[in-house]
Length: 132
Image (cartoon, rainbow, N blue to C red; front, side, top):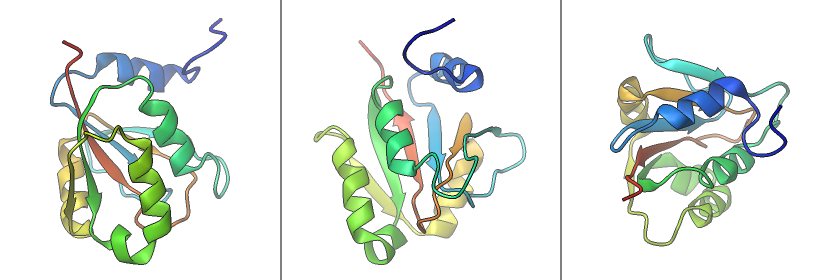
């Protein structure tokens, strides 16, 4: 039995399988999952686990090459979004697209991690980097 790190077996497997340029999505409880994309549903009640908590833990294990957010996060939940940006390393390039486009891009993801988050537009697409 693991005594630390990511204990969720499906999530641990997906993280270990990610490679350079792969896309990983961390989303709120309502983000739709496109057909063919692996779903890792961590939410078990409203707000738990929270989006920021999951993002913080995931970024401990991944090399993040870039991050993409919905433009709407800047106006609908700006303080919450700022906290998400602050979790990322300072040199990570960040881009923004309309939420409808972000949902379309999730079709290319290796997996989507759903949280219990009910704050609107709390979704991120992470492009994985390379450790060397």
